Amino acid sequence: MEKHISRSIIKGFADKLSAAVESDVAIVGAGPSGLICAKILAEAGKRVSLFEMKLAPGGGVWGGAMLNNDIIIQEEVTSMLDEYGIRYTDVGEGLVKTDSVETASALIYGAVHAGATIFNGVVVEDVVYKENAVGGVVINWTPVLYPNKWHVDPLIITAKCVLDGTGHDALLTDKVARKAGIKLNTPTGGVMGEKPMWAEEGEIATVENTKEVYPGLFVSGMAANGVFGSARMGPIFGGMFLSGQRAAELILAKLDG
Ligand code: 48H
Image (cartoon, rainbow, N blue to C red; front, side, top):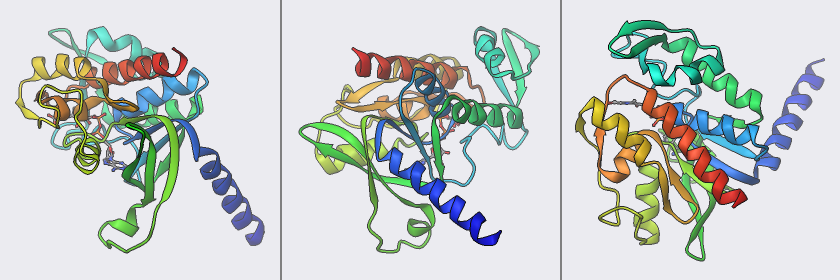
């Protein structure tokens, strides 16, 4: 029995990782925008690999606001909540609240159930950059790099499109821009840095900023606002849902167009 348990898990994981080596889309960061994008792309039949450096996917959803574990979403986005079966309560002013634990778990289940593969505990430390385009990600086990900084060479995942959904500091896009010495599709050509809180503006901007910032490299969610220098918005998540949806639309247009 023990031998069979171990061999089944080792083989199953090796098969998953081996299949991921040739992905259509590599999504970096399992926050709400990355998870929503993953579900839509997987439903469209794309081979989607999602890498999350933490043990638990879900990003900033779990903690609600200062660990008050509810989040706020705009009424216009409740059709997306309905699709996941996430329950919500009207709180007035065109807003609803949801339980953050129910929301995070539903988004994770939705992505995996649609056919995306989530690799948790895996950090994306770099990208593949060839012939003026991003063509994949470079991965390692999170404990190899944090806090240990062991000198262990990574594995490489090829992908036609890469989504930076890493949140506030857009660290992946920042690293790519610096290391490859490239100009991004931003007004300055670089990562502009997130602005302070302005909920209404930040929510609109996160969807508008969801773009292909360099051939093969897309940004979503807070990373999009970090790249384009837009405001943060606090614990309201409609923009993150719509950004994930927008990222999927743009990536599908690139893959199928
Ligand atoms: C693998 C990585 C790496 C890496 C980071 O921040 P997130 O929740 O993602 P978004 O942008 O979809 O959602 C943002 C939202 O949660 C939020 O923070 C809001 C609304 N803030 C407003 C405000 O004012 O504060 O998740 C990003 C995920 C995290 O789980 C990271 O662990 C992960 O990306 N990640 N995974 N490799 N290099 N870097």
